[in-house]
Length: 391
Image (cartoon, rainbow, N blue to C red; front, top):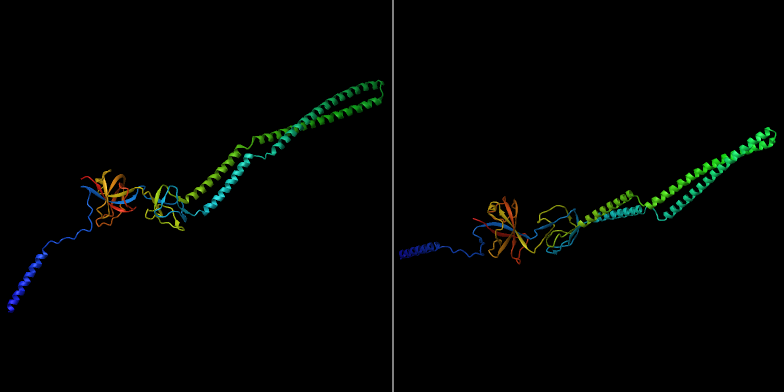
């Protein structure tokens, strides 16, 4: 009986082994795919990594002068118009410089008005009166000089008359026809008239000197009047005007520096990045968009910057159609329109983390525009791009 039991168990074991072996040789049924893989839309295609960017590209905002941020006017995602303020840095020192420049400008303008006025208006009547007085004194001196000359002539004739009388008396006295007393009286008269002649000549010389002095004073008064009527001297006026222009330029420079302390939007755009807070210190320079305090972009249309490996650059031709897909998604397919080629091959920066990716390669960057308008994209988003290429 035990014999038949052992035989039965052996048959059952062999049957089980055969069944297990047969079941193991059947083909394994693969599990269903979680999603449809991306397939090339073209027979021959160049695969590139696309980076979404605004049509205007990323506008990185910087500052002309470093300083502390005192006001931030925008926030992320806000739409701004051209010349809208974005942020402002400290201007306290510049405001003080502006007040100084304004005071310097007022001083220069006052000096210019002083040069233009030259003299007070009340001076003109004084100068005219001085000129009239000098003219009258000249006429008076000339009249006195003429009178003195006439007196000299009169005294000369008196001297000659008394000298002739003296000669006649000398002859008559010698002839005892006239008394000696008359001769002595005539001699005294001759000396008296000669003294009067000398005095009149001295008076005439003095009168001539007075005429010269009066004429000089009249010329001086006339020169002062002409100088007043001529107005400011052109070189003085030019110097004062140059000082005003210099003060205006200094004020304009300070005002421009204050204006540039408020950074404004260069065009209509959307704030893509605003990593800036009041009280922070911002320095000059051109940082990368990922590190920039404020980045703007025009989101009315989307562009895709496609990196084509330098080994595939020879297969690319401008104007080639292209299609983009979201990372790892077969749908939807985004049609791309060719825009331009940047003919400067640069080191690769946009990495896709693929195991087959070469990180030390150089890439040719091609700009495409997304044909669809109503599509949900974000700046900096990576896309799988296929560009049609020749065989």
